[in-house]
Amino acid sequence: MRQFIFQYRRIQRTAQEKQLIEEANRDWRALYPAEAAELDWKQASSELSQADVDARTLRQQKENSIKLKALRKAVL
Image: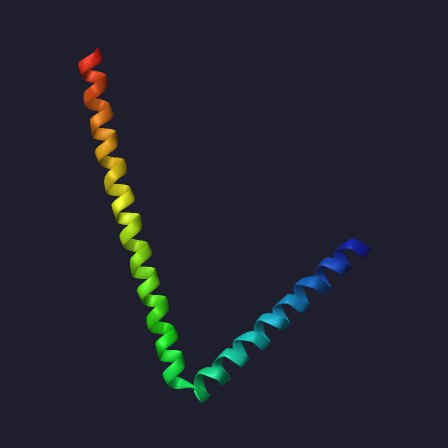
């Protein structure tokens, strides 16, 4: 029971901390809209770059799979 209470308090504290961080983030964005927009742009750019890397990786994996199947057919 004691362990359960400890975990509950930790979860509750974590939720409160998350709420405080979200409120501080909203306040910061309201005070510094230009900086917030720049940060959003950088994050979006980073996500697009990662999506591009992921797409290239998937394309390469597909090509490798096709080559491997062709090689297996040639060997058999």
